[in-house]
Amino acid sequence: MPVLMNLLKQGAGTWTAQTISPSVTLPSHTSMLTGVSPKVHKVLWNDWQPEKGLVTVPTVFGIAKQKGLITALYAGKPKFKHLNIPGTLDSFGIPSYSAKRVAKVAAQYIVEKKPNLCFIHFADSDGAGHKNGWGSPEQVQAFADEDVALNTVITAIQQAGIAKESVVILSADHGGHDKTHGSKSPEDMNIPWIAWG
Image (cartoon, rainbow, N blue to C red):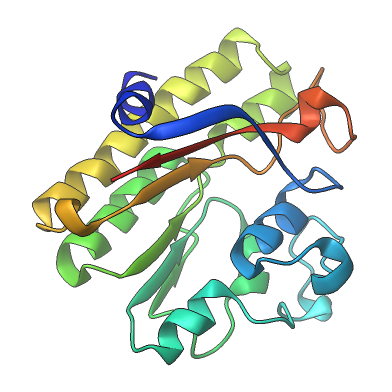
């Protein structure tokens, strides 16, 4: 992951930040984007369940919109529809499971609209971990593919002319072990957190 490692070299970060418990995708991302724990936001499921409705606590997107800012969210999994609260996102999309496709769609929006707040989710490495195991050659390749996608996003920020006033935060929702995650073990709870810009 040369692009990610270069951002870390130029910025600041840690490999031992901590995710929430349960260490699974939707509760974790909901905590990231609301600033509250699962006990408060009550998103304890981990897939797209339309009957459960939308997140009921304020998100960072809603707060940004109150300030007149441009917001966007692009993800690789349908479960992120739970965060698409009306009036909080100027652009929302789940273009593909593929990080390269998600990055391409996000990059186009970044160049055209220069959003003030843009959340981008890559799913490839999680899928490879579940299918082939954490640390498997297939997951390592998925990380490499996500690094290519990350380069697409960074290039778009530069092309948009907003690199000098942008901050990019890279993180993960959870770690993993064997072909799973969700426990309180360090393998599942430790996540990277990198800030660049």
